[in-house]
Structures are given as structure tokens and as C-alpha cells.
Image (tube, rainbow, N blue to C red; front, side, top):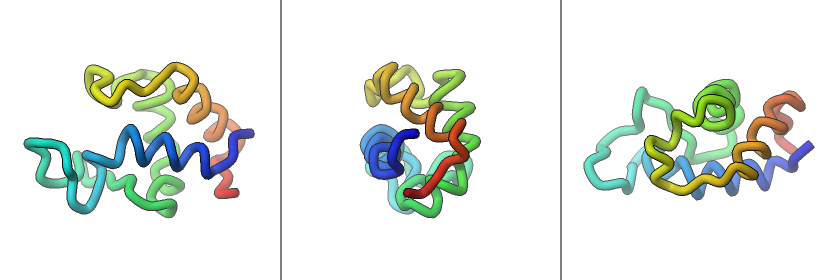
Length: 87
């Protein structure tokens, strides 16, 4: 089971530039669909959406603009499969 710290690092570096209280990606003014992934609680809260959109379907990030790797996607999927532990 991946450690939460590894999952958080992936999400913070690949997702949170748009999915944040104050997105830093050009042209994004609010977190898409209100999904914020800029803290541990929200990463845990949205684990199933992370699984569906980033680990399984590869819909996120759009066009893989942040260059999430297949290994990072596998880490996210394994974390969710293990029950999305926060340790």
C-alpha cells in the first residue's frame, strides 16, 4: 500500500495547480467542478474521483498537461484500492 505522503506529493504536483482554493494555472479562476485537492483532507475526501479520473480513465489532467506518469497513476490506484489510508 502506498504511503499517503507519496499520494499527496503526486496530487499536489500534478493536480492542485488547478484544483485549489486559488488555482495558479492560466485561465483557471476556480477549482474545476469545485473539487479542491490542495490539502490532505480533500485528497482523502475525493479519493474515488481521483481514482476514476486520474488513475483509471486518464481523463485528468487534461491532455496529461502536468505529465503524470504511469507509475504515479498506479500509485494512486493502489492507494484507493487499499481504502485510501491517510497514513
